[in-house]
Length: 60
Image (cartoon, rainbow, N blue to C red; front, side, top):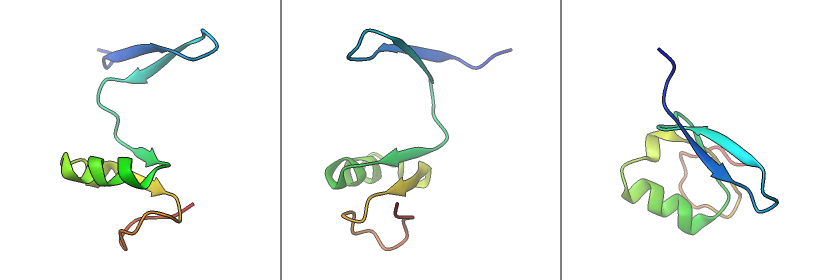
């Protein structure tokens, strides 16, 4: 049985399918990174920018 997906529309109008419950998240904004951790999703954050200040995170 295939996993559930969500379909979003990009700014240029193309459809993008994403998993309903992504296993990995890359955050490109420190405020979003903090929000993800506050939501209990920190274990899914696999990449961040150099501006994020959590020592355990991989930086790009």
